[in-house]
Image (tube, rainbow, N blue to C red):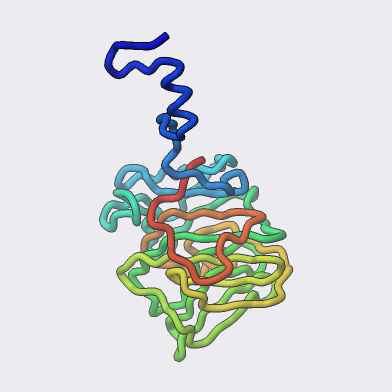
Length: 245
């Protein structure tokens, strides 16, 4: 029937609007096409000083805080009011054994606000064996960037790009068909053209044996995607928090 009431559409009007692609449709603002492959998503949106951490991936794993690891509003998150603070002494986040291995393509990415890079610091490590991912040797001259996982993913002296202290930086490590690449703020910093080893990780904020190379600063928006290399060349870092669908 044809409607005479303002704001009410008749079936004929709806049909014509849909045909002409002007019928209002709900479109989510952001959808991650690879969300089903996300095995960890930490967004650090809890209240200031909270020691409760939530994995927003479908895995919904239990995250354990060690030392004084906590949410902080001292430095606002990259896209929200809080971030995760690591004091560089004993702080770290335990990610559980369900995330221990990445065997094929992958992407590990996060936002990092270092308050020092003058020491030997690492973002990911394990409690056993020599696994150190995103290790920054700010105490060497020239500076050195290192990734080790039962073998060197790559080790690079005097990288062309170095993180900025007291500022948010986007880090991304990817593997695409055996080729590993590391990006800082979307710029390619290092490459290994043949690395097929399983990549292991267990903690955020610490490196060797889960007790050394402690990172000092803030982290936000940690996302690990299994089976997908999201970045293979220079890119623009994300401009919003990671989607949860």
